[in-house]
Length: 491
Image (cartoon, rainbow, N blue to C red; front, top):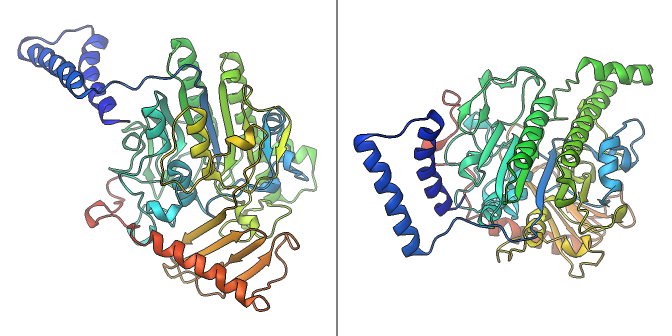
């Protein structure tokens, strides 16, 4: 939210509280309220501020982000045992991207990149932000404009429903990072989808208010999103909306509702139990997405809403998730940890049933939506707008795809490890203690043959490019000031 929006909002709030109560401030309070409103009008007239207004023709935006959804767990991407008819129909009505990758192999960095349009380590989030300071590896840089900030300035109403995972306290709560409305979960993962706790702490919020709802988290987030869309339609807002719907599912623990697991078992009694649970979990999520798409139709919003669907990283192999046909999974810089489903539906701007083989990153959503909204792009973005691709054109300029992850524990030691794709070549590590590996993705898309030793010159060139990326991000702190460390006693 812009400074001007927040200022006017505070003025309105003081008056609206009395209107809702059917009361009127009296005495000194009434005079203070009148004085505040009068002064605000003078200040805004003098400074030339105005509440952001929408431009005619701006569509709504709905970004749906799944958590750990593998490339091989969506049937439109040729999954062998999962049925996702609603994601499939979204793809059939829009454009399916076959070569998109997440910005990181784990949660927080991908989310920070998506919402900033910058590489994750350039906004202070090279690793996962967690409750306990000794195991937290990122701090979302205050002052970096988010997608919500930019769209709010363009006249959009902005909301996040679901998982935040970019900070547990000020200044990094959703309402402080550009979102007018927050209804969801502040933390990283839920210990159970039914009680919504993490380390016995309740991180469920409606804006800044702690709430304790009952039900499966996937159903709750879906109900809240449907309610938001319904209110937008009923109130006939002139402002378009940006709704960021970030599910926790299918991140472990794998907890599908019993009836969904029963459906999968009935369909395939021979399916191993861990796989059956994950299939049911994903199919339950797909049904939730179907409910959202149905609500857009019923509310008359579907034709004027750009829907983006994707995941924050690849699926977790220890939890029976699939990234077929790519190697490995979550936490890995092999493509199984990076390749993700990516679908865009925009009835006014995309031909239905189209596909793209463009190789981009999830954070390309940032400049794409800004351009669709008619806004100029900030000069310091790392992301690239996909708008030409959506129009059936090509993006000619070559680009490097950069990935970073920092992590604790004996396998990582608090260090970071990186990967870089340039053209057909990919240089990577999967631990800071392992040697660099080099693969030709055109000849060896499954990354089976390491060519680092026989292509030392190329390896050194790409390693030099990695050093430049690391150096560029070195000026951005990835730990908060001591006083702002996440405190489990102050959720």
